[in-house]
Length: 340
Image 1 (cartoon, helix red, strand yellow):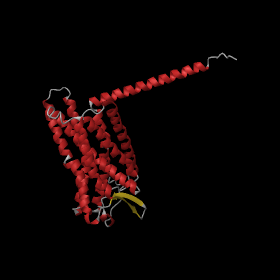
Image 2 (cartoon, one colour):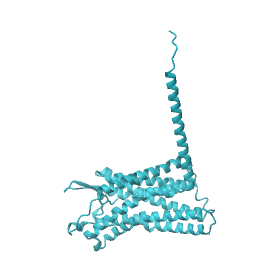
Image 3 (cartoon, helix red, strand yellow):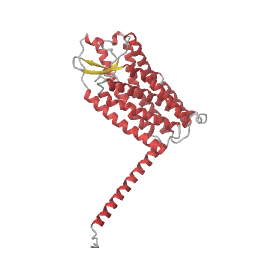
Image 4 (tube, rainbow, N blue to C red):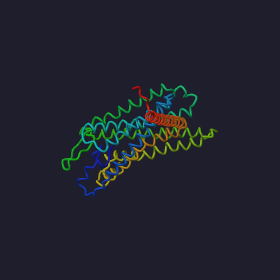
């Protein structure tokens, strides 16, 4: 990530800052660290709950179940990058941070798109898509998404390196591209992120959910109002979380060509915007469990069943232990007749 507090993945756009007089921005390192740990904890809690219920109780019977499982996995991968954002001072941790973040970023966005298409097929083409929404095709689609995500994450992992500032002996994790093709690689990375999140992902989601809304508006189902609210929530959350990040990445691309965006003030303003946009984007992996799983009736029933069974088992075990302790105390206090 291009965080401002440790300059991870610095894009080398601030070359003019050394020449122009520019005030330093306030350091928000501690606040960012707290936010990273909070997002990490919430994401792990929510997504591990999804994995537990899906594997233990739902048993992965449909394409939707497979997509939800893989979305939870990709969110956990993205969450795993948050502790690394705080400390990536050697080459191994830097490459691990880059690879984990890139893989979680691309796979998470692609699985959100896949789930949008799956819901579109389930509602708009319910009869015709029955054969395409099987467990087998869900597994095949998920494998394809992971292959694409790994392929798109390879360049960032390859060029990730640690640069040490000799003045204060601080280390920065950032991509080090070849000088003769530096601008091309920067444009390629920016374009790939914008393609997944903005140019392709958002239009597909809007198309799918608009079609779903048209079908639901003609339906007489008593629950259509709730479904429409859920659709608006999904689209709005995706827009709020990822569009600001993608717009800042787009500004980073324009910064390569426009001199007005290369000034010190403009560069630091974009860096500050990136710091906030990254936090908002990372929060999406905490919100996904709520809007894709906990709101669903099928998942909520399975979760309630799991929690009820767990609580009943824990109460039964406590009662058993209590009864056993009472028996042992009564036995120890009973006088024993000796044969000698």
